[in-house]
Length: 296
Image 1 (cartoon, rainbow, N blue to C red):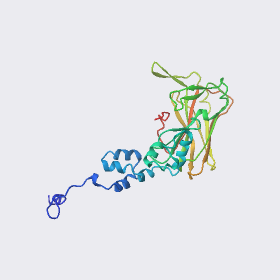
Image 2: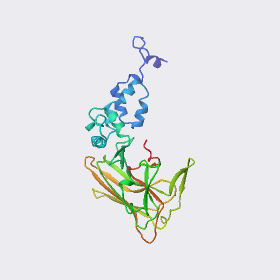
Image 3: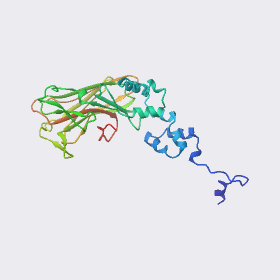
Image 4: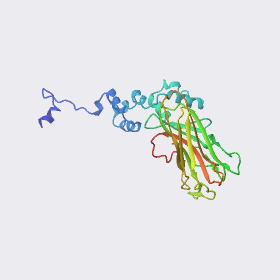
């Protein structure tokens, strides 16, 4: 009991007010929040006024932004007229928290055929590249390919292959990626899906040829990195991310050019019934990719 009383009573027996989390200096709280992920910072900010103020400090969010965030802001401003007041060059007139919130939202560029956004837990980038930004062999011949509307794509349309002998899809992107390791995937689906009476259905009429030989996926970078993988296309009616490889970005101030492709050019058999949605670049080690077609 004596130990308990000494924490409340002063030396002269006078009562001393108890201190709590709200009494901690804002700078002290901010120095702790720096080590939390952004979602955790937002949760902690609900504790009290002191934590809420610390959670908005520039020093906290500076650590969550990639070193080249100024380049990303300029990329956004260059795509949208009148955005300068929201995302000024270098982000000097708005707080770091607001800059982080801006970069965490999806931003289209190159005429809306590509989208990038900041990872919500680390200073890395996500990017989606539409099928319309890819070079697809035979895409102009409607006997083989056609673009069809799709509510299951963040680009609202996918390239659909009915039948072809020579299957080849290529793409490239040059961008100042934040330093880190990235993976590249193709988002594909066997079969053509639609909605009938509110239910999702899949037309598998044209699916053939993908079980004969695997599709070759590969990528290369301007820093001489190479990767190659082979996958059989499976599971009709389900969007699957097929990995092409990984690449490392060491200097975020220098543009990295990434070339990538998938092909199955064995002309002994035709193949068809495939939807090509996009290519996806994401931080290495991500395990769940479902739902990434949504804009939220």
